[in-house]
Structure formats: structure tokens, C-alpha cells
Amino acid sequence: SLLSDMVPSVVEVSGSLSPDEGVISKIQTVLRQEGEQFDKTLAQGGALLETEIASIVSSGEKTVPGATVFKLYDTFGFPPDLTSDYAKRLGLSVDLQGFELCMENQKKQSRKSSGFESGFGALENNLAGEEGTGFVGYESLSLDSDVVALFKTEQLEEKGKEK
Image (cartoon, rainbow, N blue to C red; front, top):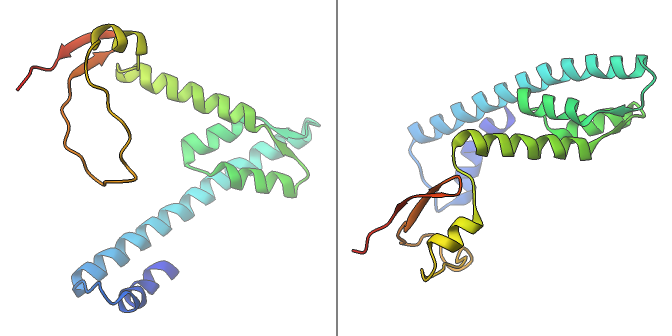
């Protein structure tokens, strides 16, 4: 693939990087595998998209439903922007709000099934007096911290002990 073929040139141009041939070979293998998987994704998603669009057109509709866009994305990893581009070329619109709603529902379901959800009320009630934290990602790439409590839904499961 194009990306895997470029690895030796990128290493050479970077100058400061000097991985051995084994590392370069591994990077090339991973890039080739990823490219092959993406090609499969496009082929599978594209075939389903064509089937769905044929059904939409035959029914006289002009919009690709958000649920269809979500199914393509969730099942095949088919990017919504590609679905949208393809639909536009055929004079169809895409229900992106419906897609976003499906995404949000999926996130809620995922959080629910994981057993962990954020509950700010529980945090406020159970951690009163604890020192808060702030975002430091612009100043530092790592930070030492302590986990002071774990929540499952909105119930306190375990509160950290002082060292």
C-alpha cells in the first residue's frame, strides 16, 4: 500500500528517528493490514449502502435515514461522511440528526450495560469536601493522582482511604 511503502522515506526524512529494520517492517505490516481492512470495510459498507439507496429511491424517498447511516457506521465502520458524499452524488440527502440520535442512544446503552454511569448528584453528596481536579492536558502529558471513589450508577461503591 502507499502508506506502507512510504515508511522508509518518512524514517529517513525524520532524521531523529532511527528504528531498526524489524521495527520498520512491523510498521509496514500493520499499515498494510489496516489498509486491507479498510478496503474490506468500504466494500462491505458500500454494497449495503447501494442496496439501501436502491430501496430508498424505489420507494420515492429522497433521504437516507439516520438509522441506516448508523447501521453502516456501527456494523461496518463505514464513515458517515462517505455515506453522505455518496448520497449527495445521487441527489439524496442524509438524516444526520437521526444518525446523531442513534449514536447518542448507543452511547447511553453502552454506559448502561457497562454498569458505570455518571451521577453528579451522587458525586456531590458522597464527595463533599474532597479537593476537585482541573484539566491540565495543555501543560502536562502525565499526572499522578489518586482515585478517591468508584461509582456504579449513582451509588457509592467504595471510597478511597487516606494514605
